[in-house]
Length: 297
Length: 161
Image 1 (cartoon, each protein chain N blue to C red):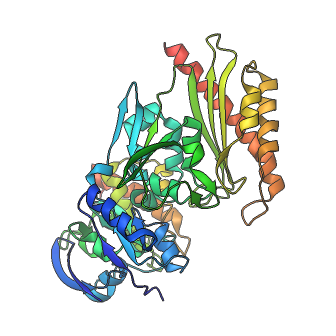
Image 2: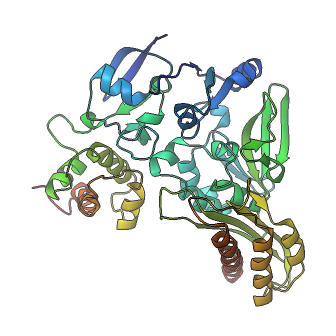
Image 3: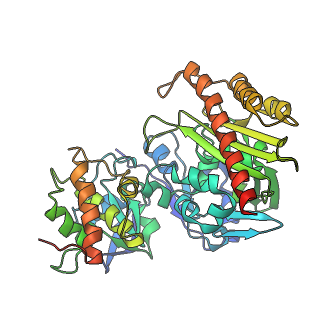
């Protein structure tokens, strides 16, 4: 039943991959983990002529941290490596947490975060955290590289800003200021092996007074065709004193900006109620992280 | 059209022919003839097809055979050292953690991979590591007990039998 025919190539270098990908165009698909791609092929939703296996390319491996540039993660890094990385746990703990909630242990050892992002499902685990971090995507092609804020990457349901011949090469998460933190909150039907009915990444940076919100990012998943930020709410919260009224405004704001649908996982009404709860919990978790860092300092 | 490839399975090299669209689970079961690896859902949800590739638990139903060239594949047949069972296998016997047996090879390999990283896992850590292995008999309690026991066998806190 699964006997589809396609060719398979494992390019030996990034240059070779870029040339192959440029020359084969839409007939080629990139195989990294395969946990989404091969399911789509088996279910006959995709029928590529060629799979280009990039999973062993050394140029796409590696997690590094630099105080000025922040955290960089190669597109070939497995989700399980992100989940376990000491650097990610230190500089982007919410991302390590989101990674640990993706699929099963086997899937995490196979899948890449790049695949999770490029698949562009609105229910994906990592995009809300990356949006909250203000992540910059490194996009490669035979013609060269460009950088794109992840907020500009998701164009529509399963549609991204990648142009023909372009591929996602890596991620850069800017360093977090001492008085800033990111949190991730999710709601699923079970505690494992589920697709989130709703998820949310939160970024909060406080002013020097420790009481005023300098900058807020609220990135929602599973409440629309893409993962996206509640931009109007973020703007409204800026400059507010962080208190109960602030949390209430954040909760009401994300609920107003969410556009969920009824589906097999949850009703639109439930999602509208829960997105506000998650925003409140995420912001509270950011405050706890900033507070505990201050106490240590 | 088929391609010639060499796969290293349980420490032995196999010269095989497979089409680019052939999945590892089918090559292991049908071409090599090792039927310990089970094929359940075929789309990565049930974990019955779990094998170790370079030590990592991997779904062989979502892995192309050609992508495994140059890697070390371990199936359930390769886990024991001859007649000396792996501690996880001993523990599954000790705790009666096998019912119909269909999930067992995948469960055992996932557990072996967990214990290689951490031989003192908490029950929550065991459940997390095995969340991608579904038991259709729902015999999870004894499986979790067995993995805990296997950790104790490895550290010498408990004995087989």
